[in-house]
Image (tube, rainbow, N blue to C red; front, side, top):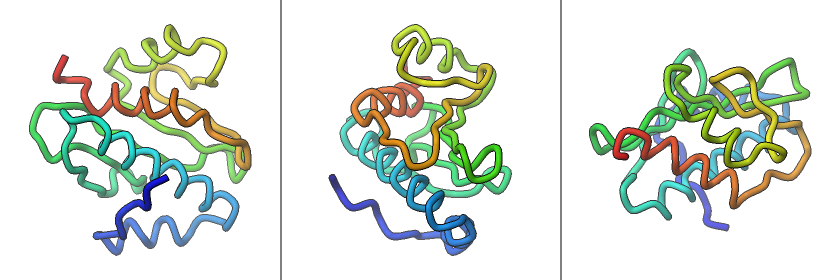
Length: 136
């Protein structure tokens, strides 16, 4: 497992610092997977980490490659999610590819339960699909 880059944006770091410790650890693990998926997907290139709607957001620095991936807590401290733009077909693709593996929220998010292990390879595949969405 690669170490994710240090926070380049103090506001993003502050959002992570504000999460309760257990939830923060889960979201940091998801952040790490996003950077790993980007590094392993040649078309993506470097990522920009910023805030969109006060949620940590990740997108390629290359223009017109993919869509932004956001992460945040949902339903208090029990769940967290990876969000994609609701007007993409990404969540339906995730559903078709991994129908029994993930829990989905409409056409915009993949949900995770705090403290449960993430299916790393499958989730990195979904992240790579999002980060390269426009390049297909």
